[in-house]
Amino acid sequence: MKHIGATKASENLNERDDRALVVACLEGDHAAWEALIRRYQRLIYSIPIKARLSQEDAADIFQSVCLKLYEKLNTIRDGERVSSWLITTTSRECWRISARNRREAIPSGSDDENGSNFIEIPATGLLADEEREVLERQHQLRHAVEALPDRCRELISMLFYHENELSYVDIAGRMKMPVPSIGPTRARCLEKLRKLLAGKL
Amino acid sequence: MNCPSFERLVDFVDSRLEEREAARVEAHLASGCGVCGETTSWYERVRHTVESDHSVAPPSWVFKRAVRIFDAPKRRSPGLTERIGHAIASLVFDSFARPALVGVRSTETANRQLLYRADDYSIDLQISGLEHSNADVMGQILKERGEGFESVCGLKLELARHDDVIVSVVTNDIGEFKLTGIEQGVYELRVALSEGSITVPNIPVGEP
Image (tube, rainbow over the protein chains, first blue to last red):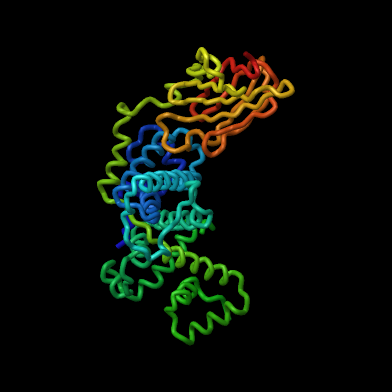
């Protein structure tokens, strides 16, 4: 399952926006930093993977980008721009590592040439606007799902992000609720999700 | 037909409605109901976003390693504000200061190269020869320990003389800039960093 989850302790942090998390980080709040990294971990890590870099390179890029984020926290005044900043920084890091690999003639880590899931990072190191928008939309949706109340988050995660499509019977079993309740509960949760997204999608 | 419920509309998009019910919802949408149309469009966007999302989470050790960045503030190198604040750059190279070799014909051009340094930053200036008492100043700012050009692109520069700003420019994607038609004289260049500033003093444009 493409897991989305949150512990009780992190619930409150999940509800905070990026700006609030950045401010808390600057005040020395370790949990806020962890929540910020957790929030953006997929976004950061997926860019090098989509750019067909190896898992080792992706891990290095992840660390490097997080370090840069940490160093730049006090300059990121507009919390709304964290995702955009991360996409730019990560794609530039990918371009840099790709260029290094080309120089050193190290083959990329992926043999999978099934193209549509991959992105090309041009020589500018910047992703095309369309790619950026897709990444941001995916991030916004996942973030909104994470911010849902427990039961809703669990249900919507099963419906949206489970590796295998689950039937209502499977979901009812896992959530210990009657099958006929799934549909109305899902509708209520989706309405909450729509409010959380507030026109962002 | 009254507007279908939110649940019905979502079920319609997910093809979970029986044929007859689906036909009713379809007819309602075809009638041009804006509210229901907006709801189904929203949910279709959600489904499309989910289906296109092949993102992967990093391995837990990668995540934990990044979280630990926060645990080591004392080991972290000081921030630029602490290191630089308002720094004055030092001249480390001047092509006009090199002694000419005896018996060797000069291969120098009229261009003058100056290299300045302030902390991690180096500022490379190429000053063209005078033409009608004016010269062009081209340069590049580089950061020694920086990766890529992120830290040097989009920096605001001001060329000043006697406290008057003559011209201001912004560095390009790789930290380069160009100042054209600068009158002969001695200038200072101010580089605004997000974390501080660097002043490059006594830049001789067209001066010996």
